[in-house]
Amino acid sequence: MPRQRLSPDARRSQLLDVAAALFAARPYDEVTMEEVAERAGVSRALLYRHFPGKRDLFAALYERVAEQLLAESRVDPADSLVEQLTEGLDAHIVYFAENRNTVLAANRVLAGDPLVRTIITDELDALRERLLGVLPVSDEATRRAVSGVLKSWLVFVQVLCLDWLVEETCSREELRNVCVGAVVGALRPLLDEDPAPDWPR
Image (cartoon, rainbow, N blue to C red; front, side, top):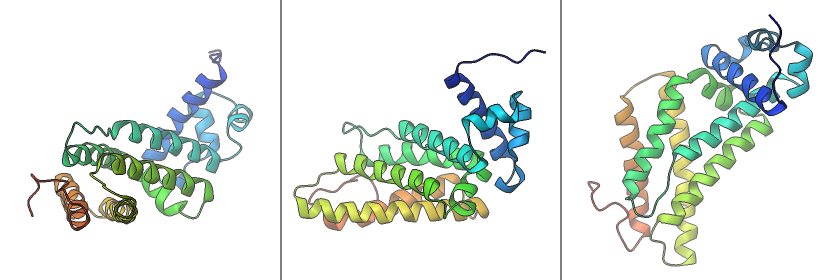
């Protein structure tokens, strides 16, 4: 069967789709570039032309994942903070649960890799800026304080979700509610206006 000719962008997307399935199915160390090429129906030379190594392939995949999760973490001032947090957290938790090996690879196996670390940091920074944009922050000093709380909270969520992937000690809904409750409780002392009046104290 002749190899299907694709544009460079379409071929790159196809290779990332194949890699996504393999990295989700098995631990990072068990996935090989040769297997990705074989599953994609391309030569190893063509795969290496798009991605110089497995780490580069994984980083490109995780960058695409981060962009998709950001797109699903909608921030709209017309909605309540809790609604927006719930939507964003649900999107992340669903992805994490369905792609456990990929998430653990990015945050544990490749945790020291500068490229992967930058992708994760950039996504967390983007989420923090979005939340800052919809919170009732009245002055620069409050903004700095709230920004610091959000930065720490996002790391808390990241660590909590990773631990949950290793051992599910609670349901997805409980995990999400713990995360929402943590940030609502942390923000209330800093803001003149309650950011989540419907959330229990």
